[in-house]
Length: 588
Image (cartoon, rainbow, N blue to C red; front, side, top):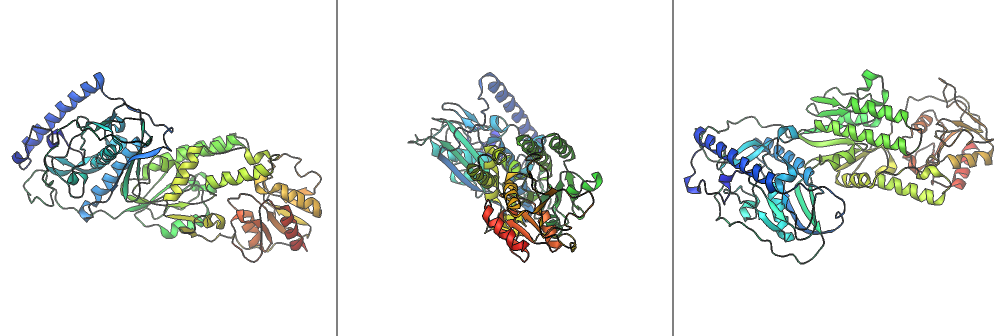
């Protein structure tokens, strides 16, 4: 909770014994004093105040020298639920501004200099704050939990406490009850400290806790030096629920409690499995966010059904920008992947506006996940992820191993995501409560929290008589999809290839092997004896599902994500001999 100077233990203006029921006159006098204090502090900081420190990576793996864990949800009364949600939202915004900040040795850290003013324009909302001895609603309310936590960690880390103000009244369960608190009020009641060695601040919210860590070089911490006089124990703060003063001009009349929370569904590409999952799980009060209205723009890839949601939103500008950038990029290579990542980042930033304080659960597309984690939107919320591909850390490790075995196949090493993005996705996936996917290989990576969906088969259709020496390769012709192994097997068996994907390895990739492309409008399954996908990584085995719907045998690796079933032969990736043996068996 945010306090003003009258409520600081070091403030002489108003003694505890003189406190009375607030009225309009005392409130006006209080506000006038606040304006004077703010003006004085602004002038002092302009002349020689602390600076705002930047975020860096150089101390991210250093030892933890100070730490604090505090509970987020301290008041379980239904009438306080809305203000608890507001407090947690304010902590999210402030923690995002602090996380990663590095304060050099001898530099002065200022709470307000780093966070800035808690205004609605910057995403702060209404929480509880202390004013004239009472807990009242105010924008930015609840930030004292963060200043308390920083103060606690600073004491452990041996920082010099340059400025600190104690609360003049105690809120049950807060740090003030233990005398290790630090109240703040924009901008004149501040928390300032000076580390003895360079220090990095980690500020994160878990589902239930606010976590502050100071990282730096380990050593013997000197006792923290507090430059202000300590106050005697303070009385307990009052509230409209406890004081009984119904004649007070600030008295709050009881209002119906707000809903326990909403779920926000923030999606990207529409998979039929995810469409069915969202349709069955969502409630009328939930929120839906998508890149673009696929039905209006005739884009089946984004044609989500959004009926039955309290509100919905889109990011059509960033989505169109992503589509244009991808279309202009080469069909394969770093430029294309970077365009996809940049577009997903902009879409995630736009859809984050739907994460209002009453959203307590987020169901999010994997493509948007790392950016929302990086910007601190998941703290205090449950998260489930709609997984469409392997985690970046596993995906890139697999490609690295394949490239080490086949350095001549350059496409195996043509792109790697930035390390900061990989780290953000890894942390977000570890934080998530559920992983939702139809992909069996992805689900096996998360045995404790995977929700496995069934693949959606297209309409069943029996293929015409198969030519027993013809197979289909979904493609594209690229190393990670198993194109080299298919080419080797086709050459050894003398069979024809129906190539369904793009020719990314060059127009002469198939050489003298019999190959054809299906004509426009024709069913590519006609005359095909088997569909083969010996991929190292694969996200959407749609052609394999179409083959199964038509009764055509499938030869695939575990990377394709199919469950073991009749008609599916699973082989190891990057194993030409296993592929050859499987094809001989299937083709008879």
